[in-house]
View (cartoon, rainbow, N blue to C red):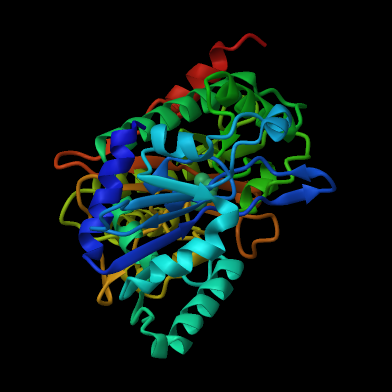
Length: 438
Ligand code: GLY
Ligand code: MN
Ligand code: MN
């Protein structure tokens, strides 16, 4: 992402804020894993979206129309000793020169400087409830200003949820964002191909996870967007199974839900395939049904349709198919009305995708499902799960858990499936797995 992309976003937010206002955006805190060990630092997505600033301990301030500096970045000072341990810091100079801030102060000066900036503004754009320490300080600063009204100082009149504005901006992906998401999707697709090629009965689930992580990291995406799910047999029916510790058995399916993050953008792919490389007849019947539902849902991801249209299309196909297979009994419209498919299809069909895997943005506006528009990216991920304890089903269906998930960009024309390189037809999967040397 170029500096001009971040600048454009700041300008867009400042235009919406108008004059006499201030936006305050802290980055994420460092998370401790255990004694002396932190999790790898990942900035807050809203903060990074506006700044492109990757370091911890930073707060961005935007004051549209302020003569001296509209964009002020509080961040760590340069410190040669610390930099020798942990790597370079931008410091105040880098904040301005590399990251486009008009002015920058050490983060330690925030409590002295920010209250004075607040004093000049009527509206404060701030995401309350995300950073308890800053929430508390902000409350104290505003109270301090209220209590000093007799000395001519004035406190802001209004607090506005800045996240609401940012989340709407983040929902519409720019060309640069689409490029990053396409790369993330391609890298993850390659990783799924590699897992399919490597899979053998007797391997452990974590060994397939290792294939995924290796391929992503090798291609420049060191981090997964979420912990990989690799579930063989009945584990494929546990929606958030991340133990990945069991053996993969001949005759079982394996479900892999994994996607890398590339340049701060997520991908999210699920593929389900036979451990042996060949689907059994029963597995194939359920698989073809989930695939048909997924394709029907993807076809609905077009401008003018509503958020829920892909889900409804998937539900229709799944319900009809489950009746044909004898897994549901009754009339299809009534079964849909009663949500009978929920016995096997327990989640909805997708979510927004972007910097966060379950990305931001409203799904409903004024109580109505939102219309899909070009530039939005969503996942389409129907599934059917028949765990071993399921009552009233023939033994052949048990331990089948199948989900197929792609990342779809809404365009003015046909839906653009960003993850299309990950094989998903029965023929494509069996052919790829059949080609790998045994
Ligand atoms: N990987 C999380 C999800 O599919 O929503
Ligand atoms: Mn998903
Ligand atoms: Mn997923």
